[in-house]
Length: 199
Length: 199
DNA sequence: TTACAATGTGGCCATTGACCACATTAGAAA
DNA sequence: TTTCTAATGTGGTCAATGGCCACATTGTAA
Image 1 (cartoon, protein in one colour):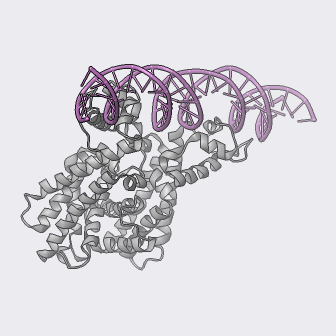
Image 2 (cartoon, protein in one colour; image 1 turned 60 degrees about the vertical axis):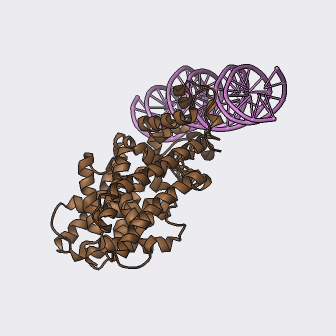
């Protein structure tokens, strides 16, 4: 179950995951093939099947890793926040920054069919954990009386929708080819505009 | 250039586009193949190449058609609005309703690689037109003094990000398997929360 | 030392996208 | 009406892919 040290290659599993990211980066999520992965790792076209049941499972593993990194990025960014609202905002910006810096991961996480999420418990758990992190930030805002009371998850989904929309449009090149800095500035506008400060 | 009436089959081009939607609906955007399309249309595996240069071009055609329908849906929905803000809001809800009712189109429009958008002028134009429609709604809000003055396109992108985020999360099954009605209610919450009524 | 299970290999097959040369037929030109 | 050309559809073919098989290799534990 857990990845023990590989025997012949060294650490095929990790190398495959890394190569997958590179390939996705180079040719998009559709342009990553198991055989090309094997080629880059210098193993036969069948070796990957010892570590992943099929292509989808490898994709799910990439997505799971992405969700874990996303969670860490949000936690890290929030630490420098002055209050709950500021921490939530910084986490949101970190979400978008993650999407911009790791578009490969981001597309693997969200462009794969729905059932990949449900069929692979690891990916589903990582996804849920990332969302829970967001829920916690929102709850803190409510506890500090900066947010109206009410369904915490509902507010969290609202916040999620915001940043996800910006991230998706940005990573698919729909926000007028801008620089990362400009996009993050725009993201700040979006976040500030939708925080219920005046409610 | 323009699709004239097909000779042998009858109207292969249209049938292919329809079948593509069905296939995308059944097995996701990745599970649609030119050969399966041909099979369903009862023609040889090569016939589609007379109407589309390759798989991507067919995909782009599906996307273009989707953008046109999206535009129409927004215009239709906005008609019953009482003022500019209300019309914008109804257009936004129509956007999300479109994504929920036509997930096949929606994924074809936004899950394909960026270059598909730029390489196929028809799809790019349809996309731009849909966005322009949104810009017009925002501009009307500004003219009615319901929105602060400023960069109209910036506000339009903000509105777009909002509804796109909800639509994307909803169609990828991340908003807790809800009914369409519940999702639209949530969408209303999101939209109301971010309209700059209090600014 | 031996046995076993984890890991990697080559062979194989159906499917796919894409190209080719060739057949058919609609519709303009005669 | 007949002819001819270009649009449309067909079968053949190729390389690449995902996935399965039996078999080979090797770390590790008995």
